[in-house]
Length: 298
Image: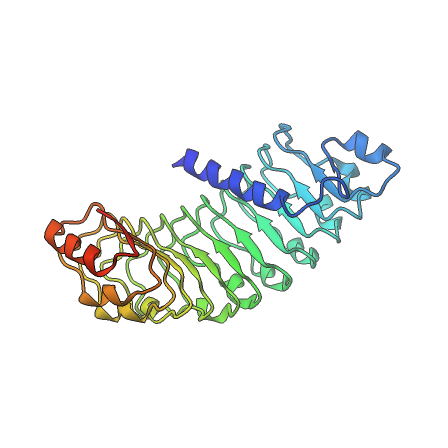
């Protein structure tokens, strides 16, 4: 599992780095070089430096918009961090941080926040003041409920909470612009009272304890990717036909013994994964004939 989360972290970093022009915004990897630079410093990376604290002189880097302090030994966020008022992208993956102080609200321009593989048990309510935030990654922490602070940031587009201990979810529908939501590898067993944002396109619910596929998921007309593999789902409602824009559907490793005829109504579906279910091969073959444009794995 840890290797998988590390891979996700690396993919996240690759995505973030792709947003930065390395010629226009060269990344400095040590404080001394940054301080000596005759050019304005916009990007800093102290990844895997064995740091227990941030360099105090970082406060002089008041133009920095990208900071990577992944893979260190930080147990808290130093006050000096919150002097970086221009910070937009912050990566604190793979440290040992247990809480985020109130001063996080000072980073008003933050758009991307990544804090995977730490020890958070909750998200500071002050996080709700970061109204420019678009992406947040909190994989592999110790969260037990969906962070309420996030429901107050309507402009959030991507939330990744993979591999926590979340069982309670509420008010997600308040995040109106949310497109990407990953709740895989948590402890969710019931979503019937959970409403999702209508703009959602990507939903990961793999490795939870769902018994049924909730109808409020099946009403997401813009949903393109749905992964509910490795749950305990034994029945799929005919209402699945409402997923008019679905491209990929993963139902692997559940307890499905039959499939609704309405699956064949999903004309946009390109990939359907049914491996690991006690289905009859004859039913799967019949579905393949009805859906020749869909790659069905069984």
